[in-house]
Length: 114
Length: 109
Image: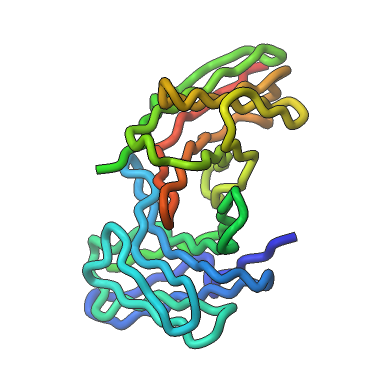
């Protein structure tokens, strides 16, 4: 089974703090993704990565950065957390190629910024 | 803007009935389509995917794709209360998935 893990299920941070969210997958997937999910807005793509040290902006990259130093690990960084970044953050991974491109999600991190 | 549209619901069906969930997409270049189930407070889990016109069955679930009409559906036969969740439709195009906002399904005993 594909396993995607995230470092924390719940996180509370203060405005202005630097926040690191970690994601690890054990299936040797090339692609990794970070989303945030908010009520009524659905899943929105923040950043994704095709390979080590590569990153691509998604639909809402402002206020976020990412790091992918190893194939299995993809980190999301909030440089200076703000209250509007309170959300559920979901990491996902997938293979490149084939005909399906299905993504597998981690359990999510619910981040509250006060 | 590439979009995937779903009715937010809730869709309420009695136990044992067929639940029909629908999705439309705007980009004709979309290649594959996915249905995810998401329980409240949990992450999405993949139910099935489809990339050819027609029907694809997996147990109680059937996905249907009509590329000419840009329409995808998910049928759940013999619905159970445990099927109560939000169902997300997603379309793959080029390099990423575009998700709809989901349809909430309620199955009542």
